Image (cartoon, rainbow, N blue to C red; front, top):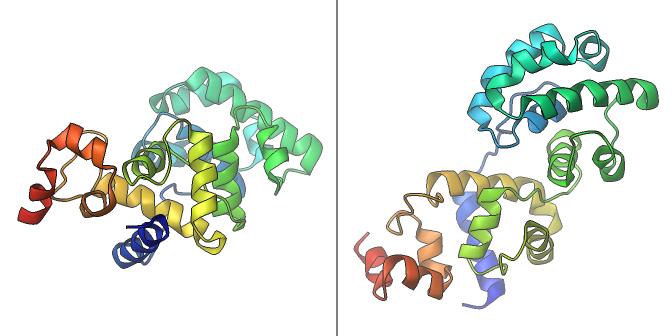
Length: 225
């Protein structure tokens, strides 16, 4: 199967499985989304969604957040991990939003990535899910799946993002990156990978990887599914 055919197959199957793509992190505006995405670093969306109501009950705007101390923020978000770095980032970026952007989240990759504790992936999620700007945030699921599907060489997250943007239509980026995440969680996890369930990898996956993981007769697993 040629790469263009693989891309069409992925798009078709993911649209069939996930016609709707609700944003996994609970939020009410770009600021609460920014905070939730920041908290999601090395933390599950499920846990973040349990912690953000506690934080947003105290502060859901930059004006309210700067009234809390870093220690208060840290105590609330501690279950999300990396709380010293995250609380410092939340406190400092809230001050910057007030000082430089009238309390609003800026709508540019450059301005977002200049904020404390905000990297390219976080900025991409906010631009995509908060403002509807085409972006392709690459998390561990997308990085893993595009490598398994032989759509990137897997050398780096940056390369995976470049390959995804080159291969998939720009108009589909915002929805497709969520669809791939949903598929990765449900059908193609990092641990407990089951080729009988992961029908996309069985159909278009990297042969050397499939042979190494499941043996030379890996195709029989899918045939028996």
